[in-house]
Amino acid sequence: MLAKHALIGGGTGFIGNYLNKHLISNGYKVTVVSRMPGLKRITWHELEKNGVPKDITAVVNLSGQNVLDPTRRWTPGFKQNVWNSRINTSAALVKAIQSSPDVKSFVNISGVSHYKTDGRVYSENDPVEAFDFMSRLCLEWEKAATIPEGVNCRSVKIRTGVVIGRGGGMIQSLMLPFQLGLGGPLGSGKQPLPWIHIDDLCRLIQYSIENEKVTGVVNGVAPELCTNGEFSKTFASALYRPAFFPVPEFVVNMIFGKDRCALLLSGAKVEPKRTLELGFEYKYPTTKLACQEVVEKK
Image 1: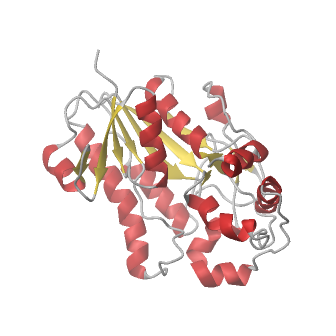
Image 2: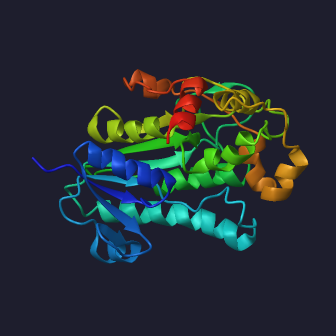
């Protein structure tokens, strides 16, 4: 039997670092595909030239320029980078997997932006469509991550919500203002916020690698539906702080621009129907548990 050896595309970011540690602690060897060479790494150029390194049994793609980096203006060049960093890496991994018979599973992480923000609750069985930049990106991303017919590799597409964890993502942006008692909801606060705790996402990725029954689309979101306002209140409460200061919509617009602020000011109601049916059990199914863990983690 082959040893458990995972190749992680984009394994140096916030989620990648967590996943790397998680898989190693569960008996995996991990190699990362990165722009920069280094120990236990290969570059994207090396992947395209030489294919997947031998004895890799699972491939996970987490690649993608951070869309919500407030230090980067939403210019045509940055938009192109956001697009290419997802589509091109997915396509490169799919191409490399086709000539790598040892690879038994490919897990690609995308988003939930192609579910519409129309008030109904969406599951994996519902159709998705393009209606703005982020939804078009998610559709093309999943298309690029599709393993062709006839290739003996199980393919899983995890659509994640906002990833909650210490040291990155939304929590890193919120921590200081909330600690100072200056936190609050974004815009009206009534918009749904699909989310998942970083530990649960790492566990779901491992579950997808190891269980042959997991194929196709699964929603990487917590079972508890909540709004941005409810999340802000729960997070502030875990820090023993108020959440009095809503960030007006025009400020969010000014910082992030129209395409990006849609991620923060409008969200779809998304449930993990198939994820639960496939037997996955959440460690942090509620915002209260997730926020307590994030706040208590040193």
